[in-house]
Image 1 (cartoon, rainbow, N blue to C red):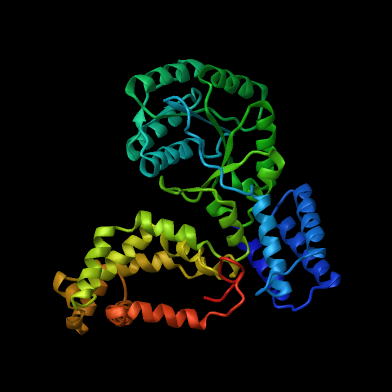
Image 2 (tube, rainbow, N blue to C red):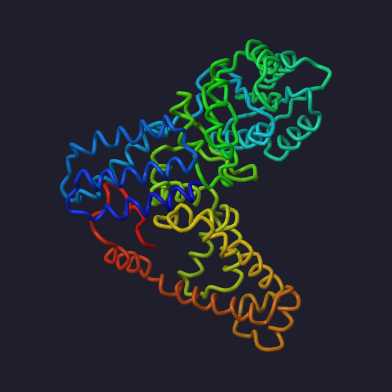
Length: 462
């Protein structure tokens, strides 16, 4: 998400960042380009006008903190205004209510309500240690009921059965009673959608809402519909008291207009982002972190949290102990590292959170086919014998041919993997005995000064 916008803003603000003095002319020119970038990202026009007006008003009397050049102070101002535009502070899911807390999922057909219900259930089970039940009140699509049942089974949520012959309000009421009987903490109610907002849809969901009085009513909307997503959410919010918004399919949205428009237009906070098809691909919406990503500063905090939650700690300790004892880094270790990286969404997802990478052309990472290359490397290692994986030095001509044939690759692919492995093994060797600390000190010394407070330089080089 935000690939095109990040590239445009990084280029624009990069030209003003190093200026020792700000004038009305260069501020006006920068804001004109920022305005065009936001409009091209499909941000709603009233939102763009208000944003530019706010930045311009504050830029005129800009007070520059010590240690920052005027250009850098202007970039910080744009960052702070983006944070406000996105909602200011994180709005967590409110579960402070009598058990079971009811969460009602609403939205148009095809927005991803059912998938988001499964993702939210997994998030609450794994991240907040909640006992979660799910029920489908979509009586118009039997496939939706079955889809939610399978998702519940997959994520470990309690499945509360429903039937297409029941009324949606009765389904919700019965599920609420069953969730109370089972001692559940949270009940997620998935509802039916329509191709557009109509009286029948609104009447039905109002009835369901009145029947169970949900503590949280989340509107699920497809981010790829741009500012239309914000307008749809506004129309829905006027008919029903929404407490939050879930933006789905953000991994396929290179513009980001929905995320930048929806809070300002609806007054309703975005609570979650759907960032992929897998059930774990749901992220909390952090306005400050997202603003940093939009400006090419990266999102290192989210990356660290992702690593902490998804890295196999036992495997990491095992590798650390192995290296500490002076044992070499082998191909089995390399395979383990690559598989864990894929578990975190792949190299593209991780790189996208690093400073400077977001400013690259939108297709730059995709064109590298990183995930495809990782899969090929794992296949090559899998085609080796345990002896070859533990002692790569034995892999010579005939063995390389056999490995290439077994993995469906070429001998040069095997050679490339072995070369990359040798480079990584050397790096691991340097990290022993305080080598990691030395490397970090060297990296720090090479970093340019004048970062914005608390972060990497916007668009900083890797």
